Every structure is written in C-alpha cells, then in structure tokens.
Image (cartoon, rainbow, N blue to C red; front, side, top):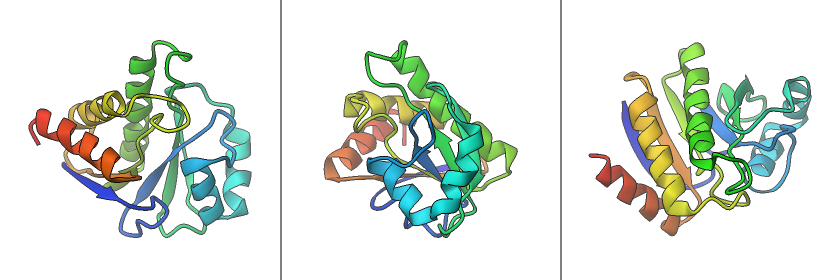
Length: 167
C-alpha cells in the first residue's frame, strides 16, 4: 500500500479507480466536495444516488462515476463534529467502509478528501490523524491511497500525521 498527499481537485484525478465523496446523508449535491463531484459527474450521479439514501454517519456506498474520468464514486458520510457521536469512531468507520467498497470492487487506487474536516466542523489535525491511522491499519496492501486536499494547511496536517504514523 502507498499513501500520497496532494493539493488539488478531487474531480480531476483521472488515474484513480475511484474518488470518495464527502457525502451528505441524502447523497445529494451540496457545497464543497459533494457539490464538486455531483457537478463533474453529471445528473446521472444524482439518479444513481437517489435509491441509496439516506445513509447514516460512518456508512459508505458506491456508484458509477458517470462523467468523471474515474470508474466509481464512493459516497462516505462522516460525522458532524460533536453532534454525531462518538465522532471519532464514526469518522474512522466512514474511512473503513469506504475502504471496504474498494475491496469489494477490487480497486487498486482511491482518492479521499479530508472527510468531515470542512462544513462538518471536525478539527483538521484530529481528522487527519483518524484518516491516516485508519487507512494505514485497514487498507489492503494492493491499494494505492491518495489524499486529495484543499490547501497547504490541510496537506501539512496530513503530512504530519503520516510522519507520526511511520510514513
């Protein structure tokens, strides 16, 4: 398994089998990552998501990627910090269930955003620690993981946690 950190747009990762949507419970378009993915994937994504929602914090479901250059979109619902409890365990579960989707489809590469670290209010450093620890512990050896992050601050937080976790 390899873990890569990049600053970029999760909808522009054509070399990955799947990208992860920081979804909302209804699996609808919204702001942030969910809005960007839905806009890039086109209206068929909303149609594919409709019968799958709502989902609970920690759950993940997978759909085709439609107009994205990836094969799949994995929709993972992270917790709203200090509202959906226990927040830490639910965030780890969201990553774990997204990785399970990768295994079920025999994917070799996936791109994750910083789930719950935006509008859902999870502190960045804590979200980065949970993401890195869960991926390192749970990802299959054959999976290449890329964290596609929004800015330098996010990349630095993930890089620090990756270093603490032993690379």
